[in-house]
Length: 125
Image (cartoon, rainbow, N blue to C red; front, side, top):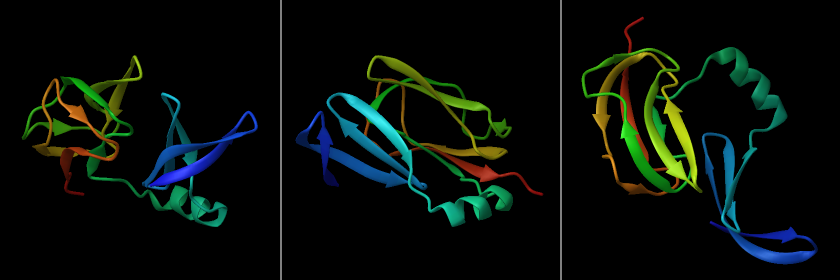
C-alpha cells in the first residue's frame, strides 16, 4: 500500500505492508520495521508461543544462499537462507522446528516484500 510520511517537514509517498504484526515501510532506499500489534495483543502472543511455518521475505532483495534442502530436519532458530537488500546481508531463520516442505526460491532470485521463501512442516509434538 502507498502511505504518506513526513520527513524533515516535507510530505513524501512511501510503500508499506503489514506482515505478521510488523509494519514494513520502504522510503528513500531504506526499510523500517515497526511493531504494528496492539499493546494488549502483544502480551497475549508472548505467552501463546505462536509461530509460523513459512519464512517470508522481510523486504525486497536478492537470494544469495539457500542453507537447507527439501526434506531436511531443522531446529527452531536455524538459518534457512541468506538474502541481500540495501547492500546488507540478512539471514532468515525458521520460527519453528520441523522438516523443510518446500523451497519457493533459488539463489539469484529477486524477491518482493512478503514473498514466501520456505515452507516448513512442523515437527510432531
